Image 1: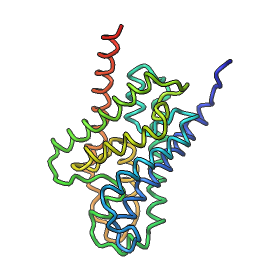
Image 2 (image 1 turned 30 degrees about the horizontal axis):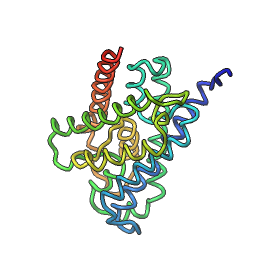
Image 3 (image 1 turned 120 degrees about the vertical axis):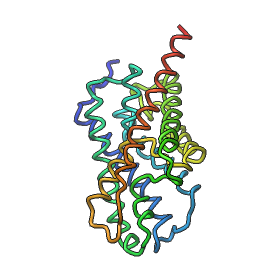
Length: 251
């Protein structure tokens, strides 16, 4: 039976749509638990990490059958480096993910606009969109993003190695396992930086914060923005190197 060839435009559309829903729900739970006037105000870290895991799961359900559900430039890069994804599709996927993240965050703002206006703290408003370190120590913040993404990509690569799906990505390990993976990374390794582990997840929403006329929003903290972009990329590279070593050992 011949494999179905999915048009490039359709693949990019579902990467966009899956990322859009992931960010809508992920940034949405941060808004729900941190902004004044929300019924979920004060929900706490456990609520945020579980909801982020479920948000990724929803994105996987949408994009998985068509793209493998990368939803993350670090995942796309890591899979390409591991020989599991075409280099020619890397840039189109990354652009689709960034646009999806941008529009997802934009929707969150208009959804919670009244709550944004009721909230005075500038960092709380930024925190809905982008990651902010709990304690600013750039070297350690960077290492946190590297390690968190290393775990994410390494687990994906090893589980996809044993998977039975045609496409390779988050979807290759199943929607529920990836939800649990993202949740445990958040619970165990997210306390230092807020665990971006995804350049598009941070950059797209940070751009929304920068561009929108949010009342009393403060700085978008662009001097820190390289950390959740470069850190995940380096983490993905290290994960692929470990995966290559594994491949060499079993041959």
